[in-house]
Image (cartoon, rainbow, N blue to C red; front, side, top):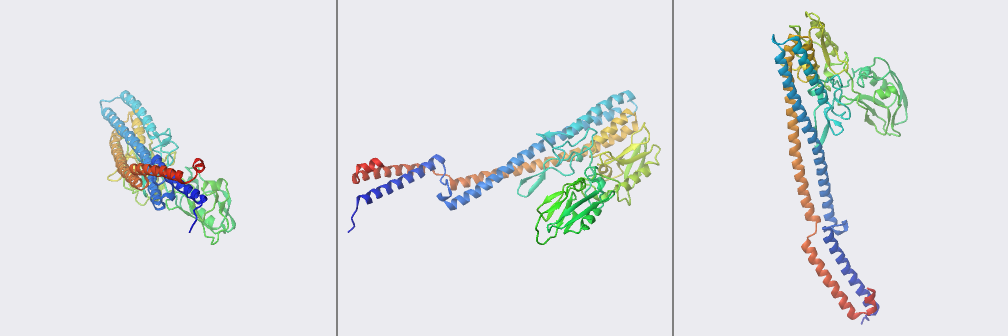
Length: 503
């Protein structure tokens, strides 16, 4: 026979009261928070599912924010390029009104003033911003895309964004695709050191390089060296480090073959190593240096232009003073070869035509040897060679407008005729660029709709697992309150009043 002591009754009363209190608190928490699961211990398996859904929802929301920003860029680009097309139509109207015998030198000077204003507007258009970012400057969006002379000075790479898993798209276009060409040469073994960093070059000099085993060697760079010479100089330093050109043709890559690394790769920092984009200390066995951004020089390979895509060389027609000649680039392999081909044919014309690399090192220019005529270039047939070289229509809206203005001021009727034809190719290119922007905008809209729907569905599924049933929780709370009151009343009949007062 077991004796029930007062202590046992007190303890049992306290246990029942605490149990009821815990149930009441849990029910009240569910009602106040609206959640069935408030901590992992409430439902460990359910909490794992909830966390997975939260991660998916968060990722979708981040992608939606990126796409909102991308759509803002694309919509602004679309409307801006639409205005470029409208201005080109106005320029063509001016060309039509000023060509032929009805126009005079005075009317053409007046028209030239209008075209000059249009050029200023085009430069401003090229430097359009969304927030603080220049949307037509490519990846270098913190800086203007077009300089005061109408030349493209932005990046050779598109500004891109990941809008969903593994889907990365350009979120705008570069001004070099429609306002002023950029031949954007890739870095290759034949790239000269002097052409790097926008023409600023990398100065001659020496710097130490230390591999991950701690071995140090000296790298010496001389005037006139190419990237091939830099690669050989790194190999000759006697370390475990070798150099190569990155797969995207933008920078140098240093690779350390040390089997058991003890330290980071260290490249002494001075003007030479900085110019090559490889200075500093990195705790990696393979690292890619800074973008080298080479300018075009005579030795630049045609195959290296346009980020290594090259240019297909078709015949080009030179037009100057009513005369025209066809240039063939057969056998040309470098930019210097192409310049020679143009100058050889152009020099034989009545009013000579001379080609050169422009002051920014981005494209070619052609000039007339006669102050009263303006030289133009166009395609001899199909293709876009003149456009890609920066001397024809298509993507060279600002240069063509500048030549058109010069022809108006010089009262060069033949030059105005030539500009009239090239303005049509400018408008075709602008329309094509605008179409590509529209396609990307539609892609963003469709994917954003999918991501928004995915976030909504995941939210619903998470709610099924995590959220409380208010009716059930309220019923449970009422039942627990009744049980708690019953416990107190039954305990009052059994235990001493002092214990109940304590409770």
